[in-house]
Image (cartoon, rainbow, N blue to C red; front, side):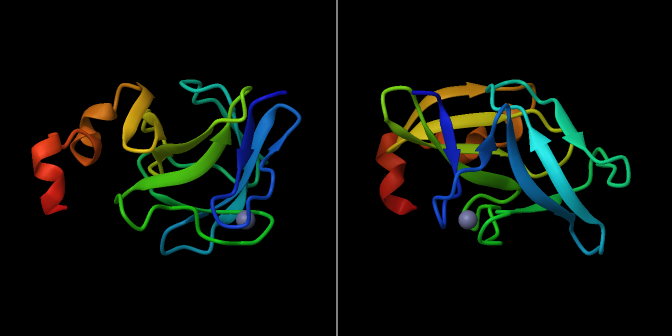
Length: 138
Ligand SMILES: [Zn+2]
């Protein structure tokens, strides 16, 4: 069984062949298009149609191409969440940055960070590295 990626809302399959397919729109702009993400964690290669150029530093709203739900996290500013199912059928939350060019990915199961990668993690570690004794205040 291959690793699969699902929409967090409709649980539709977002990985087709070798890419995760999402719809993306620049915030406060009519610019929108499809974006293919590499399903390998830590690989930030993206593919878009030449008519839809991703601008580094701009924030994008990602939506599920199946149910059109917004995938940007309501809880964690600037992060986007999708679901991963691994080879063993285990389910994880995958968070990545909605800001183009930012490299950070978190793979989370329950409250535990299973994997994190990217040179921009420092911007977001504050969301996830809350000492256990402070969690009750969240
Ligand atoms: Zn969906």
